[in-house]
Image 1: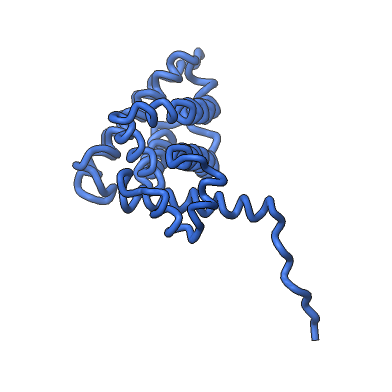
Image 2 (image 1 turned 120 degrees about the horizontal axis):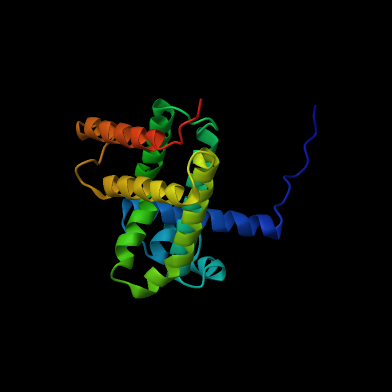
Length: 210
């Protein structure tokens, strides 16, 4: 018979990280299913199974919790994108596949966090200002990922411009009620739009001299 000892107790740091993780995941769930206005600290705590006292020990304000959640979602999405996309993006098909991966990330339930906060920030100057570092961090991470994909084909100015076109196009799709489901009929038009964008990017690659 194999003897088993008592379960190992988590350290204080592990308990802290576990509480923070539960709160951030609960905030994503609340923003996705309830929306910004109904994502109160009480709702988040109920979802996470954490007391409000514990929440405020880690996040002094509701705004701080929301911004930390946005940062977590952004970093996770970029990491997932990097893990999914290969290093060789040479052809129109390759670029179209990259754009399709990005579209799925933008339309994901977790990314609803960003849409809810950006809409709310239009009428909330404090939230708008608080989100600036998170938005700058997300932009920097995306530019780094784009540089890894296309940095040897597009110069810095063109690279930033292409990223701006891609991001604004995909964000517009995400906000549009005409395309709520990528499998719905409008999705065929979107696929064609992504294909045209992929063709534009590849055709802008510098031509090799014979």
